[in-house]
Image (cartoon, rainbow, N blue to C red):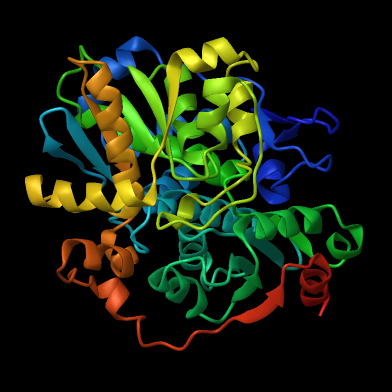
Length: 431
């Protein structure tokens, strides 16, 4: 498998190079030259396959011969060694819970897969690899956990000061060792722009070998497909595929879902559920793609004003707006409605949503109201305890704290505060 840059100004590379480089030299995102197709018989037999078998079959064409089969099997097994259950909330709405991993967030899968791939590739290199990543919340903790104490790898995480939850901040600032947190006095978009600039700065890349662990990296993006195959395995009515609603910020997750669909996964329709940062829902309505500065919301992991992965979504559909709109709908959900949804769903069903899951739930509910007879699933991307400061006042009760969180709440925060100024990041990387 080869990967080409979406800016079309750099040579195609293999999976190993795409993983290590993160972004192409021309600043474009890497994209697979061919999109694998799984046969209909494979889906008919999916109930007999283990999750490890499913994940291996899905990812093998993208990795090719860059990682030996036995080693890739080990990586896949370690990546998904926790439950990913499909839970019924009500008759027509189910929740795919992606928060049973070590940092209680969906990004554990991509971060664990990438860290193990990069750890394998790092053994063949002399000198350290620096993973440089921007986070709007969950990516930071997942990357920190996935790469913690990995030999030959240093991690530098940029996060917007005061714009991640208190639990998320603890997860990315308390590990130490090879994990370094930079607290940026700005927005996630500022962090993301600074990271992108570092990759194109030869004065930095000449002294540090940089790669990215954001979903712009193919090794972070591609394994997110696993969720959707696992969901279909658990979906009872195979004759009527689900509507899939994904809370969307940087659009890596929903892009992976749509890639899975193009590879053969049966899906009725996709919904991009957004908060006030709704560049894509506005685009789907008007065909005008208008980037705006990110605004802070209670579903902070989706506070992205310029979603990097949407260019990949467009590439999946050959930049054809009509084809995209036929399979994808977009909804904008306010903070007020998010709180009301958390409260009402808990009261009516007993199910507790986190703010991102609540955004998805209400978007799916609105879609199903207009499309009677269909059923769907939401992606519950994080455990509600990660947003206890938002959720507890809404439900007026405390959330039980899982052991993985309880162990870090009293640890000291270790971060370096910098301005939203690339020169400060550059100085840090060169120091």
